[in-house]
Image (cartoon, rainbow, N blue to C red; front, side):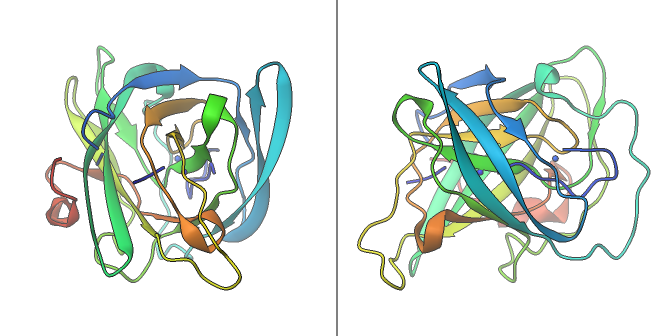
Length: 222
């Protein structure tokens, strides 16, 4: 059961994977406000059936220990195919790994965290609280420059709890997840069911490469 608001820790602007849920489309109906400070609140706007619904999303980011100059050939939505690589869960904590495959004719580069927004029926935005990083091994991954050759893939992990907290009696369940790659303002949409409790909280890792030690943290393929 799975589903991300748009944010990134890169200096330029906005940013592995469930069985049968690899359908990917390009969505330009959502506009993401990228935070310029380590911790901020923004808004993601989704359009459904001709009407516009605004869902407030909060992003908390760890302070980076290093800086990086954004390359000109960063990976954009038009370069990519997104899919669910795998899922697993224990003790109420669910991990989903997403794969981002480079379909462009040349190498492209990622640096930073992707954004995410859960979508419900008809693509309606669901309340989503995106947290960058975390203490769990599949989230506690350093931000690095990731070069992705033609036809190759990079990954990122998403974690959430499916246990109700506080006054919650149920948790919203997504039908898909809108993903904003680092340093982009356009989105990819992947079909995936995510029932994130605690106000729709999703913790995301930075994007990492196929040769990164972080691949040991990815959820097993479904």
